[in-house]
Length: 404
Image (cartoon, rainbow, N blue to C red; front, side, top):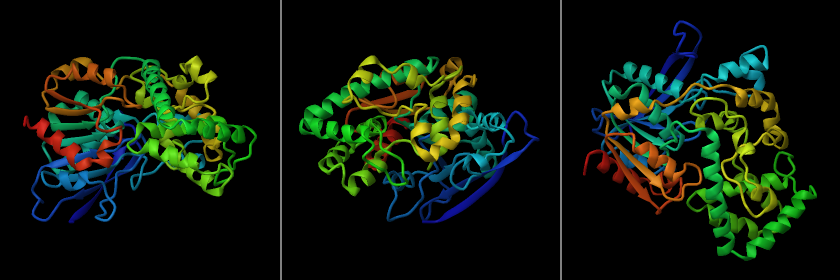
């Protein structure tokens, strides 16, 4: 599989193009004979995750499908992978935590779009197409607002964002979905109720130590519910609960299922900002947490970041003050409804019917703004359908964008 590396410098702050720069990396991939095909840019989910690596032995199947029609641009979004990374708190430039937080306000979707525009110009492309997964779909929607004339087509999987609504509305909707998924899971595996309660009791007693030394708390244990939003996630939880909670395998496996870690720090302290279309998030998931989630420990949580994550996860403690400042930051809007109504670009969007992370009804409301949208509502997959059935999912989206 031929490939080519691209490295350019981009402004940290696009409003100050003559100021400090950071590095941006992208890998161009094509199949033999496809070196003149149009470009497709993959925008990864997250925020804070690098693009997948093209390894024939271990790569998502959608890559092969993409290469039949496109040259693929695998972008490491700013702060990730081989682009200038965000590391530990001591490695984030700035003399104070306030300066570090101000720096990180330049890592949202609007900055990623402007990075893409500089990369497009570097590659000499008049237009290119996008494939946005989850947060990558949010970024694609921002792209439709800021630079629609640069786009030939947009393909979105589980990533049509809520436009013009507060973060509280977004997180309230995700709790409603997690309530249903939790109840459905324990109805399907009734024996797991007692197994999960037993694990909760041991966690409450501080009896389970995770790899790295953190204690597994009941709050952390309930966050494994995020896996219920993924294809195969219910099975992973069931197999976990088959294990003796005091066995080393249980601690190892539950650690792998926890949703927030220092592996991708941007995902922790900028997560709520990606769902905030203007204003401060103010720890939204914590504030709108329903009363029944406090009363019933069998209601599992999903992609909900809480202030206590930065206390209970040892590797995240360094970011606690930074996270508080970013939660209080007044963010500019990411989307412009009128710009979306004017965007003369074909958009094919897969909307997962029971998506635990991106609410279906809020996504369809956004779809109603786009003049050339082709929504595909499906219950065949959970949020990671592009990963688990990528060839068929992307094939369907490419056909929809072409009007087939």
